[in-house]
Length: 167
Image (cartoon, rainbow, N blue to C red; front, side, top):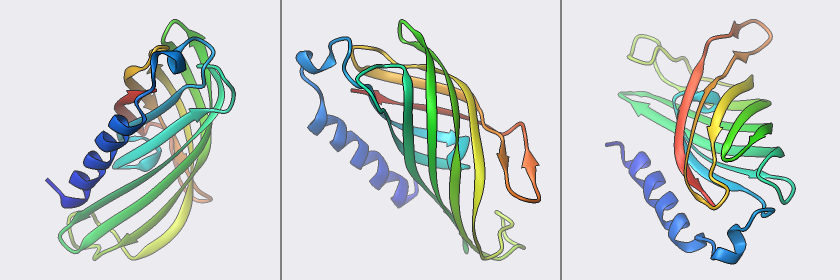
């Protein structure tokens, strides 16, 4: 397993242990916050993310920020996804709508596995998906369709899945 991925997983587990809410903090009406690891999605390949509602609710408007990094051979890809999102639903099950941007910094040789040239830039991202997010905290899951675009490209059928912890 990649050293960077091990560090991300360890940091998330430590964060869960440190910020685990008390019963009083997880009552209905508290602001939902999530940490999760996502394969695909706005982070493109693999990313660690933080998501929170902007009000003291489990649905409604919120945002997410993350970081992703993959290195294979002489190629590397760093991504920083940022999105505003809106959750519609109740009873732990939500439809997620989101829009944002992902900063990309890639380095590599296009003849290698990832077929990357050295590049920096930003792409637009959207999210249309399902999210299981328990109101009293615990395991969360998400699956989404994530169209990605820039001024010259549009990929409508990019997707992602993620698992994490709600507190």
